[in-house]
Each structure stands twice: as C-alpha cells, then as structure tokens.
Length: 46
Image (cartoon, rainbow, N blue to C red; front, side, top):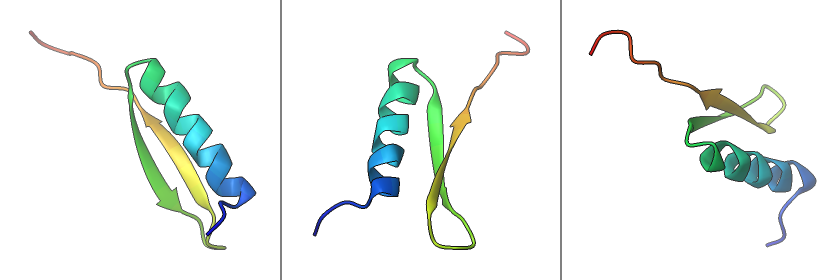
C-alpha cells in the first residue's frame, strides 16, 4: 500500500514537530484527509 501525498505531508509535519520537542495530534477533515495540530504545553505554576 503506497502512501498518499497527504499522508507523506503528515509524516513530515510530525517529524518537524517532534524535533522541536512538542506533541502533535492527528485528526481527519470532513473530506477524509489528515491534519496535524501542534500542541504546546506551558508550565503555569511550578
């Protein structure tokens, strides 16, 4: 099974986000494509 162009972009985005040390979420759009959301967590107290 070959990767689609969208799936290749998702993998590249995940690698970039992980290299910065942040977390990522992968969600599907209404048309079935994937989107990547970068999650940045900030320490508020402590």
